[in-house]
Amino acid sequence: PGMGGAGTGESFRRNIESLNNFKIITRLIREPSAPDTSTEIFGKKLSIPVMAAPITGSVTNMGGAIDELDYNRAVVAGCRKAGTLAFVGDGATPEKYKIGLQAIKEEDGWGIPIFKPRMDNKEIIKRLKASEKAGALAVGMDIDAVVFKTMVMKNQAVAPKSVSELKELKAATNLPFILKGIMNPRDAELACEAGIDAIIVSNHGGRVLDQMPGTMDVLKEITSAVGNSIIIIADGGFRNGVDVVKAMALGARYVLIGRPVAIAAVGMGIEGTAFYMDQIKQDLQKAMVLTGCTSVHDISEDIIREIR
Image (cartoon, rainbow, N blue to C red):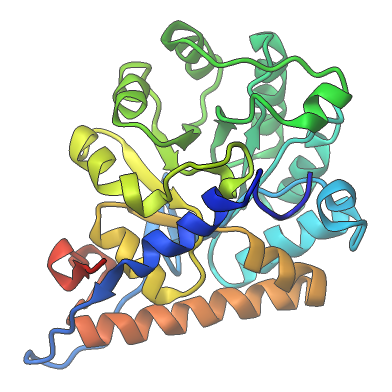
């Protein structure tokens, strides 16, 4: 538990280091135009291709800095105010997932819940059905959350999932299904085989295993492996609009941001979250102007260079 990284913290630090290996190449001789940062996901229009990452456990992970429901409301409502979406999480406490769903329901479905890979698929399906009733835009599972101490402490059995088990989960809901925690091209290809709608390339913020590569170390390999056959979202170490451009240049369509959103939400609630997301939009606009991108769809690999 906690907001830091596992073991030595190398996996957490590597997310930042791998991002810093890429630098922006400007493109300035062109016709002037205002950059359009908007996009859409699953039919929902977003002001920016950036969403809040799922974080659960304000008591165990944030030292009780904020009530769990207040945190979820701050993030979901704050993101909606800024024109984007929040992901909400699941916890080791069996009923904790209902708190995130309550915040989503209160905001007319502006949110996506991500659930733990519980060993019994029936437990996950129960949560998928509850998400449908709450009006969630999509659902998902963080498949890498199989070694969390908190799950053991609460006697919550978790396990990796086979392709057939993923197909069962996908078939159990009428909502788009997202798989979080992909760091291997093979897993990305198997997610496609299972009919998954989107994957999140993520090492769980460096919180599941020490000595892992950063998201940007593996992102290009994964996008090259699966191409346009699945939606790719990047998560891990992203902090500003320039970081977002880097990920999108390597093929990600969206970026998730976690810890800074948590700081904003704990510090100033809904207004803090909305303010932070608006800052991301301003950063992104500036980066797009300097790289000659009139829309987020113009962002391409030729505007970054890897420099080690």
